[in-house]
Amino acid sequence: MPVPPDVRIDTLLQHTGQAPLDPATGSGPVAMPSMRTSTVRFADMDALDRAQAAKARGERVPTYGRVGLQTHESLETLLCRLEGGSRAFLAPSGMAAISMALMALVGQGDHVLAADCVYGPVRFLHKTVLSRMGVGMDFVRPTVAALQAALRPETRVLYLESPGSLLMEMLDLPELARWAHDRGLVVVADNTWGSGYIYQPLALGADVSVVAVTKYVGGHSDLMLGAAVARDETLNRRLGDTHYALGSTVSADDAWLALRGARTLGLRMRQSAEHALEVCRWLAARPEVSRLFHPAWPDDPGHMLWRRDALGSNGMLSVAVDLDRAGARRLIDALRLFGIGYSWGGYESLITQVESGALDTHGYWDEHADARMRAGSVLRLHIGLEDPRDLITDLDQAFVHALA
Ligand SMILES: *Cc1c(COP(=O)(O)O)cnc(C)c1O
Image (cartoon, rainbow, N blue to C red):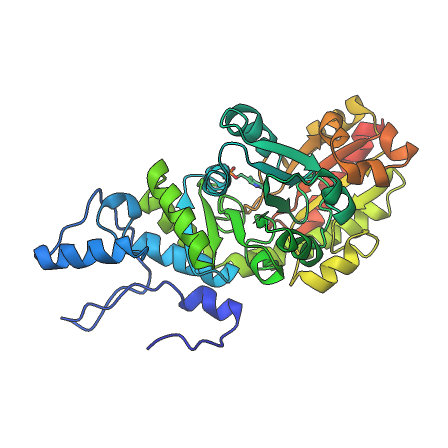
């Protein structure tokens, strides 16, 4: 029985990408198994010809193992349903999905406009690879005025991330996408924060959504995987050709883990979001805290945009504290329940110090940081699934230690 088309997202997460039934026995596994294979075999030459013809039309037909069989297809289908796309192309990491999407869309002499709040390594991608291919890239404040000022005749792509990676600033994606489309640009959005569950860039106007499945979809800090999702046929074709030409492939075991994680994406995100708000409430009452960056927090400048465009929140927050660099390091070192580390979206709480140099390139920081915030430090926290009362107790003792 096919899944009714109008079911809600939590239902889709359980009923999409199921294992097929064996026509001979009329039965099949509930959970999709990991189908490891390096290649595909065909019943006869006609079957192979049909597959080749479908592949030439741009359809998802495996003729070789790199494309992946049902495990990969299930994950792709689930990501398409989450993001509202018609095709998803898997990559071995979120960063690989970003590189693949940009390489699919630009060539020598082209120019990319990017928001200054995007995931830091995208700047490195430009510096080391795209610039060598003759692609220009500018990172600017994601407002229509700043983008217009930086627009060039050869600009092809607007690359966004909402909310931004370090300070979670919400962008007005519909407005920016309208501006870009009026100028013939393709809009690519990094949707790792939303992961299709709480934010849907394609519905808000983006043409391609890239997701680090590594984070919330995988959700258990045990795999690296990324995807680029689109719904326009021409864009799907370009992404598909580039995906194929770059030899981008993912282990069936990793696709299986991502699929397993995705079934509980909603539960985990809701729980993390609830815990993050509790931690925000506690932090906001601390005299050493000068500012919280979390769009679901009512005082966040992006709160109204978040209410308009997002369907929920998650465990990511940044906090400006009145501690110098050494004090912030003491606080982090004193924590017992927060792992010190990058990444997020897993079951566990993590913390990193945001380097002030990284914020220098963020117009949002310039606009919102007062003297007190500039004198202090910014910490980025991922609030996981632990009991938030324990996390708060841990933060409390770490503040005492850092201020001693
Ligand atoms: C982690 C992350 C990526 C990269 O994902 P990897 O799987 O680690 O390569 C891209 N964008 C954002 C916003 C991220 O947080």
